[in-house]
Length: 153
Image (tube, rainbow, N blue to C red; front, side):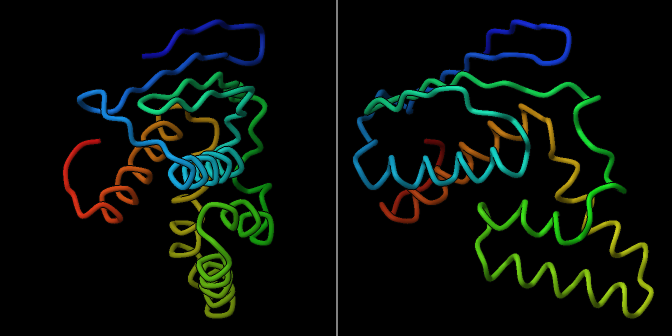
């Protein structure tokens, strides 16, 4: 559920999501992982977290989504900047791997492959739906793996 307020440049959303069956799942470790994932997605997508509240069975987010005009075109984002955008969410190992792949594409002239890799990350910028989907999906996968459960959370 989202509520929208728009100004000239940005949109603001109050997003709420509840855990299935009202289960109380957010302990300290769960909140830590949730916050880490949320901040990593903020860095990658450019969707700003103005404030949030993590309760034991649901969460509230107040988000600022930039206008399209505020998002730099993909061609203006260097490979180095792209790697720094993905590092907080994916970690150092994945960031190094992407940097190496992009470097290899440059070295061997694989322009199409390079753009495909770049766009897979850069197309997520400024998108509320991507932010929320990935946040909930990543948390659910992590939680289910830790708890030995499956299905929607």
